[in-house]
Length: 309
Image 1 (tube, rainbow, N blue to C red):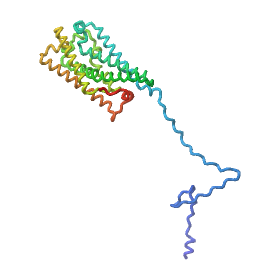
Image 2: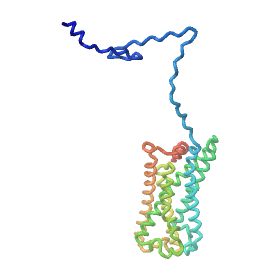
Image 3: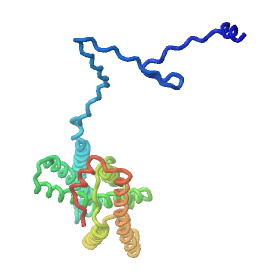
């Protein structure tokens, strides 16, 4: 009976062994032996695997070495704009220019000269850096470091605090009462674009310079001493002009008493020191090496310029 049941039960066909020695149902199936090489014919070597051609390393293009060019062009344009503003301002025939002290008794004019000299030093340092790059001349590199140190000192002590002071104080007093600092009579002599060139564009220009290039600030004690010397010197100059001519440089000084003038002059000196510290904090915030490493120009100049003491 068992034999009849086995004979009637259909048997499942056996599967051929897997190729390449693959495992079939958990056990390895031996590979079929290769046919021996025919006599007189060497065995064909295995065909090498073809890998996709790797792209060659990208070489720096010609613009990679010209990273300084946009910054240089920008500085040169700012320098030309200040020269144009100074020339147009000096060409104006105003009664105040003919009195004692001329244009030099106004802080706005002194600030324009500071900004023009500062950006002139910037352009000169850029040209010197391009000319001495790769020359290997130690003397030229030493002179370039001095020039860069002078540029950084001017921005920290004069260009930023004086420029921001002129813009902030002028527009605050102008918004309160323009007759106290910029009477309507001056509109007949100074056009509107020239007024903004002297009292408005100074701030964005100096902020652009701080953002595009790293500047090493001097030690805080020497920097504060320098800005205090400038502030006290200008206050003494204004008092001397009043002593000689009997008139104050700015009309609002006529409407306040001696005690209020002393408070005002002391407040301006404190504000100058505060703006110096603000510039130092802003410079450190922009060029924080841990959070935002310096870009093209800052990295090169950090290696060249020493810390001012």
